[in-house]
Length: 258
Ligand code: G
Ligand code: G
Ligand code: MN
Ligand code: NA
Image: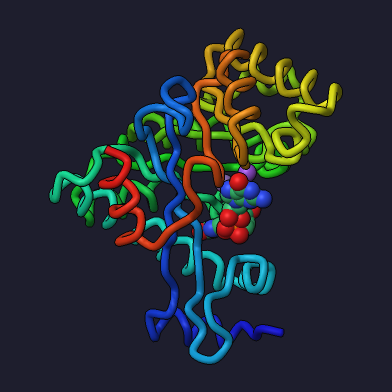
């Protein structure tokens, strides 16, 4: 059990870190094509319990206002990493940041993002934001304006875990979005499961019809990669390509791949 006060203290002590999972073009070799992005995934280097993933603490942070502070830390850390990778010519790809519902609900969230970009000195194109269907539908009244403001800053907006929520398709066509990320539960059942295959193909077709990019998460084997590429999926993410890694390991992964 984690307490809010422990999280606040961890933030002050600098115990949070971002890991990065590569996102690559679906077309290319056995492990996909060119690097086109990296997803930032939050970790807590706990002094006694080791490396903790978000499942161990996000819910607690969400129940308190600490998630706003933590979310802003993540945004700034991702922005700093994007700047560092550009400056050192490691990679000039956007870093995708997972938003919490509390951040997305915040009035003036667009302005808060603009402030971080300005402070760090990067363009909006250096970041992408991932939202869940649930977050979009819960804030359907304010979502169009918020998304429009974010995209005006140059940020890409993706719908995470797509296919598991309850996005009204009517709303989907109206919202200014850039990308759908097919939930890994569907990808995990490929290639055997006919139902998962039908849903995956339908999402890819729909995304293309709506002019959205489409990415598949949790790609673990080459049969999955081949099917997704054949079906027209643009991007891949998953263990087959690379796991979430600390920044130095990500850089090493990238060097070895070239
Ligand atoms: O690596 P993985 O265990 O990191 O992530 C588990 C869940 O935690 C995923 O659903 C992911 O979207 C979420 N998550 C990871 N990093 C962050 C973050 O920085 N902020 C928020 N709000 N959620 C995150
Ligand atoms: O933000 P999102 O809910 O998409 O979080 C992605 C989660 O999926 C993270 O916890 C990440 O560590 C995990 N993950 C990434 N690639 C794979 C994979 O190939 N297989 C499985 N099972 N999990 C993965
Ligand atoms: Mn995500
Ligand atoms: Na996801």
